[in-house]
Image (spheres, rainbow, N blue to C red):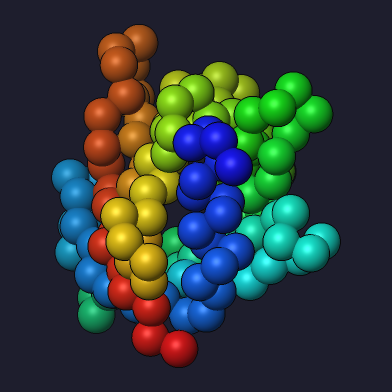
Length: 143
């Protein structure tokens, strides 16, 4: 498979539950959990992600589907309470998914540095500037 689909291939090959810690200027410290499953004979990865902390409990929940889009690029379709419905993020470079829908310029950086590890980061800007990392979780497969 070409490098553009490496993230999808890695995730569908190492499904399971991932846990780890996260932090960022917008989020502050948190615990993260991501359940990764596959669908359509490995042609799609389903990511169920949540972030919690001791002060607020459950802070963030997402349900996403990673799939090869019709144009030949990976697409990450994300639903969460903070978004206005399902938002499509399109891979621009390996692991970097960008969306220009909605009030914020947003980016998700999804990497699989090694089998059984995921780095998942949200980038955005509240003004017209370039997005910057606001929250990142580093996760390891636990089951």
